[in-house]
Amino acid sequence: MYAAGMPRKREPAGAAVLQESVTTAIATAMFDELAETGYARMSVDAVARRAGVGKAAVYRRWPSKQAMLLDLLAAAVRRSVPEVPDSGSLTGDVRGFLDVIIAQVADPRIKRIALDMMAEATRNPELGAALREAVAGPRRAAADAVLRRGIERGELPADIDRELGLDLLISPLLGRLLLTGSPVDDAYLTRLTTVIAAGLNSA
Image (cartoon, rainbow, N blue to C red; front, side, top):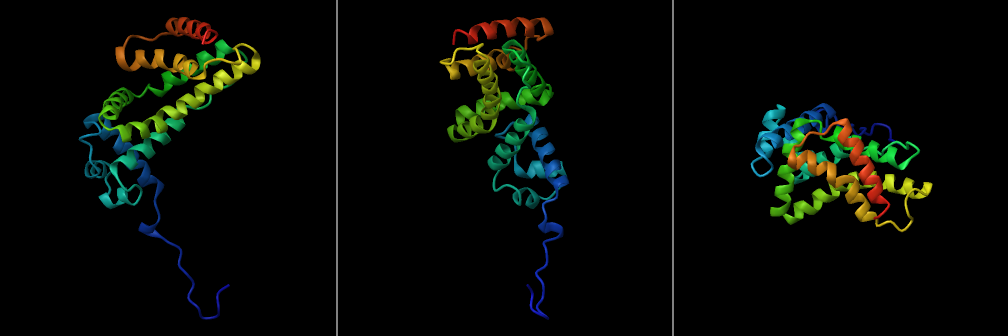
């Protein structure tokens, strides 16, 4: 309640409000800059210039370059790695998860960014740990849903080695896409699905 004559507190407006369009512009600029120059050479100044905003707009949202990177990467991964729909079978779920990985790396910037982040993580253990939580965490959570449903259906043993199972679901395709650059077509994905499903029963 406000007493008569007492001035009401004004709601923040203008620059005090973080505009979503500005945040989106900064995010787009950061990923473009990251893909072109790499994390080590990327600067907040360069991201702000590319986004067409002042440097202060970036710092109002994140206290540092690393905080900006981790927040925007985590948000992008959450959007691009949804839980795989329940297909009703282990092989169907495995194929669905592989399709999610394919969609996630469809953007040509992703390979350059991912390889740069892998190299940066070896030089900066603190950043590496944060990247594993922000990037690998959501992907492994989506893969774990595939294992959980397989166990619930009786298609996988209850005592499956979950960590090994997650590695089997994620590593072969991601390694091929990011490291070897070998082609991935429907026939390859079908064979890989069969191999992974068989391997999970031995994990």
